[in-house]
Amino acid sequence: MDKRVNTLAEAVAPIQDGASIMIGGFGSSGIPFGLIDALLEHGAGELTVISNNAGAGETGIAKLLKGGRVAKVICSYPRSPGSIWFEKRYEADEIELEVVPQGTLAERIRAAGAGIGGFLTPTGYGTLLAEGKETRVIDGRGYVMEAPLHADFALLRAERGDPWGNLSYHGTARNFNPVMATGARHSIAEVRHVSSDPLAPESVVTPGIFVQSVVEYGVRP
Image 1 (spheres, rainbow, N blue to C red):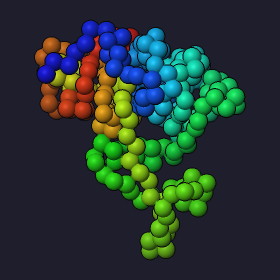
Image 2 (tube, rainbow, N blue to C red):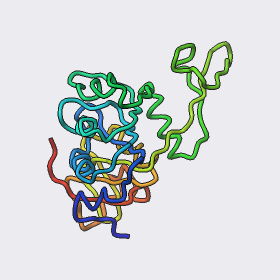
Image 3 (cartoon, rainbow, N blue to C red):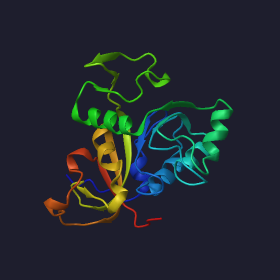
Image 4 (tube, one colour):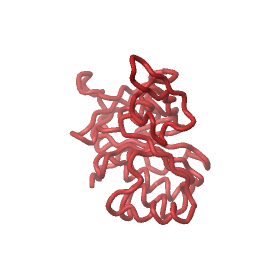
């Protein structure tokens, strides 16, 4: 039941070439920078990265793109200030891109964690985002059928954790992290502080049943 691991390298060791990986965070908040750096050193490639954006500058997801480790990005905002490495890889036709509206992205991940086979949303109806997807008209309004979005792994950033994998988050760093923990088959959390005692039940946001390993990483950019 003790899900603590000693190092970031040990935490990402199960990730192999071709894996799909959800990476928590929104902007620069709640991004598991330590795990991303460890993954880069680990060497796995041909990855599918599922995240809110495609990184910026020279840190986080942008590092994976710069290192040529990413084959596909599934995100809402591929271009943002400083997203130079995504732009370079995409313009060179070195990565594939799937754009998903932000609310749809969150709900597709949630559906995966909840075991739901799909859902109808009006977002994207009548646009290129609906091409190839089932559509329906209900009470005069068009809807697009969206499928759940699973991943092999999720890399998460939490504020506090315990040996059983229970997690709590700091403010807006919560963002995509909890839902991604449920949508992945193997969730890895870097935590600012890991307690030897169980977290208070009322503070738990992500129950440990959704987390396979926890590693302490005190740095918080």
